[in-house]
Length: 112
Image (cartoon, rainbow, N blue to C red):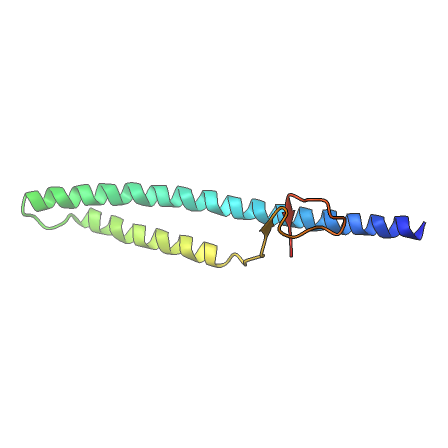
């Protein structure tokens, strides 16, 4: 009976580790999707600003103030993405099979 309780404890610990790893992976995926959306907006802003600046150059005019503000906005947006990812601690997640579980069964994720 003690062996069964011990095995149950090992399985529970393993399940908790997998749940924690899945939660961390889900959080990272959410941050990545948010970062991609922000980068897509920044890319659109850059394209518009460059088009406006090129048009002004062809007319031998100064760059439009709106284009300059847009470039400043892009710079700010990109710096916030960097800060957001910099605040996510590296949890050291590994792919399945890299770290065997105690019961030697493969898991989806393993936390070393």
